[in-house]
Image 1: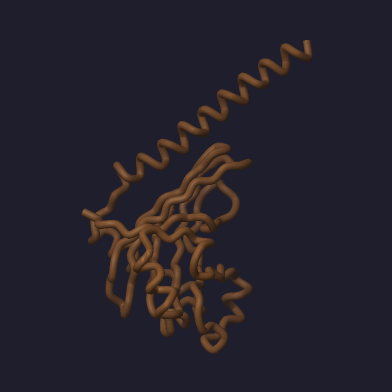
Image 2 (image 1 turned 120 degrees about the horizontal axis):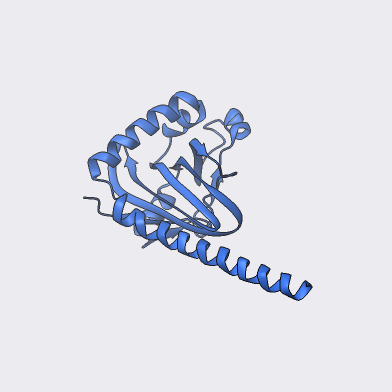
Length: 194
């Protein structure tokens, strides 16, 4: 009886893992096919995201005044079952003008199930960190410039005199059923939108 249960459990686990792999592969392939946005759509979404972020998070508005560049991903789609992925497109703003388009892509594994959407903005406070983004053929967050995630507590105590260099991340518009947000390990690559 115990051996039979183990075999059934093993088959079920194999089926679940196979479904997770298929889901992850679809999530990584489909956004490139169906979610590719035009430059005008990306710019519109970035404008709306920044306006909303500045209205709800005064620290982000202050940081925009000293940032050398702001990379905004207005809508990241994340989903998975055991194996997951996330994808989004955005724009780099330098001096208030678009200076390039980027995508963010990440895969994950572990105890997870569901889907969510969210956005984030990366504020580059030094020319060196901004140059790293522009010159890399793909920046994996966690390698290269240090990224500080600004949660509510940090945002409340933030002042422009304490932030001198580095990259600061603000999350916004989280919706969905997955717990937690993360960008560690995300790969950011320059793209040419339609």
